[in-house]
Image (cartoon, rainbow, N blue to C red; front, top):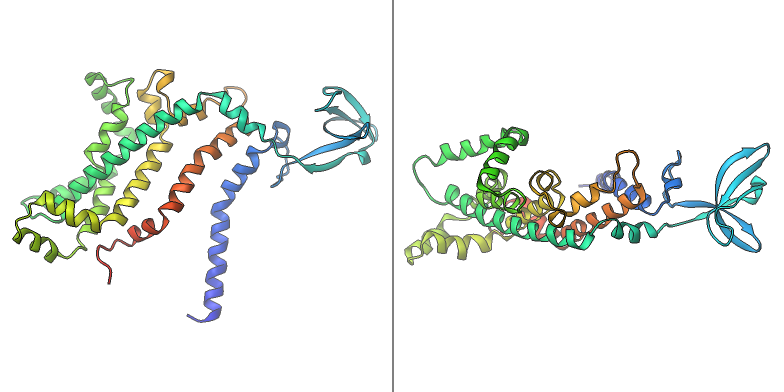
Amino acid sequence: MNRTSRIIGFIVLVLFAAMFALPFVWQVSTSLKTEDQVGKAEFDLVPRAQVMDLNGKTVEVKPISRKGSMQVVEVKEGALKGAQMTVAPEKLSLRPHLEWSNYSEGFKAFPFFRMLKNTLVICVLVVGGTVLSCSLAAYGLACISWKGREVLFWAMLATMMLPAQVTMIPLFQTFKGLGWINTILPLVVPAFCGNAFFIFMLRQFYRTIPASLMEAARIDGAGDLRIWATIVLPLSKPALAVVAVFSFIGAWNDFLGPLLYLMDDDKYTLAIGLARLQGQYSSDWGRMMAMSVVMTLPLVVLFFLAQRTFVEGIKLGGVKG
């Protein structure tokens, strides 16, 4: 690849990176704005507020209306907070203004830490159940020969074509009959029953592991569970990391599941708490975006911590070299 091709490729990657980063940048910017700044037609990447000099101090003001060539403003801070004044437009200026109170007020708007605990409990159980069940199922479909294996594999893949809305009501009725409504069991137990996509991905990964390794273990007297635990799993860390990250993101962001199955406030997750910031007739977008940033940061940190393993898992290769 020549120098020009590398430069073009780098530019394309930077453009795509900027395109995907823009929503997050907009989210962070909005989280630091007041309601007045959020409602402005023009977009300011760095939030700015109008200020004026009042008795030797710079105070923030809010434009209300025009009176001829003069501007009517409302003082938003200081001893004259709430007072309306008529000033010449040239006395007004813009300065950067970051509304950090959106974060502190956002934490007070709903029981954040209780909902964080509920969310983390569900996420840990979902990740553990998904990794365990999918790795076992994938091992049976990839490393053990038995009659009907391929038929069952394709039948499992066919379940991926079913929309979640089709199974929503039957699942709810099933969980209701089991007495699991208003518990975390409907959110956790399905993870221990496997996920068709993750089973498919791990199966494809396991098929790249040399069969000679498993045959040698069988000659030494190892059973399938021991082979799975001591040979397959250690070689599958990258693929298992992908499964863990994706299942964690799914459980962390899940809104519909907790909304359907949880009834008590003390069992709600962060996704439900965030939705509460949106009212029927109005929404506090600053606080909502502040809490959205707080919810997004753990996912970003998780990805960067597992980035190398995550990328290796995407390559789907069991043995290097």
